[in-house]
Image (cartoon, rainbow, N blue to C red; front, top):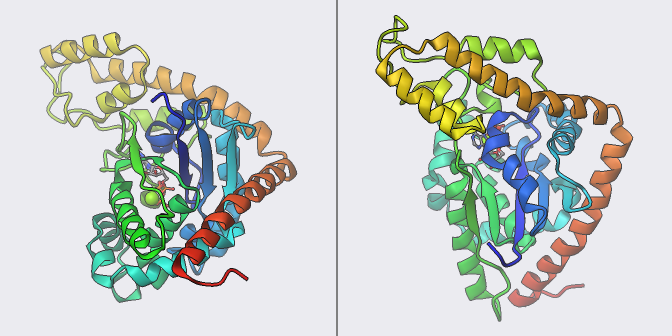
Length: 334
Ligand code: ATP
Ligand code: MG
């Protein structure tokens, strides 16, 4: 990538960020902010779509997520950090886009389908939740983002966004909206510490960025390996072995991991030894993040002010897009 892109990513403030966010998206964002124009949106309205009766959970976690960003090295002078509910243009664009998306199309979105089943919504499904891919399309297009760093659960959202762009551009007098592309990391879906398909706040199988030394130790100790690897001398499986999945995702020395895999498959390398290597690497990764986080979370006033400043910049950009869309549709901008 040598041209400058406009990037929009974000997270729902439904809890502290975790290792899945780190490898799926945060790590990349820290790199990207040096080369591109980057906006990061704390998606509180989207967080409310499945927490409507528990708004405190969302409001409380806004600054927790801000602290996570600063702790991993997101620099507010390079990245615009902003809050979804402070940007009315996003809600207005959502309202406009809702009219060009069919119920059948949102029902077909595989991630939404999966989440509805997981959350056991059935007939109590909130309308807002069903419509969140549309609001996500509003978020992306409002910033004219062409690149969206996400985990692979978000690919259907990008596809749906581009459909909305296509349709909207055919309705406006001239094309207003920009198509976008997902940017996947090498680890686009980190499994949970329980071995579940995806580490996720909702599933309670996370290791947060503020995890203590003891929590890290306990999580690694409890991790699944190969259930048939009973004696150290036995050959073991690395596929589906969570310890090796995490070593691949986090260990900086790829050659060492390759050597360990070969040794494990051949027999003679114990689970305990593998876990020790993994634990050391996670402790080393998380110690400075935990420390920085503990400092910045003390100063809530500073975190809020950074979010206010970023939201002010984002407000200008998103209002411009909204006005262009309205004009394109022939609606008066009063
Ligand atoms: P929730 O359970 O509340 O939906 P979440 O853990 O899925 O929370 P989100 O805020 O929905 O987190 O996701 C923010 C971003 O992080 C998205 O781009 C998502 O794809 C990415 N992400 C989340 N979990 C993982 C994971 N386990 N591996 C890789 N990327 C992830
Ligand atoms: Mg999610």
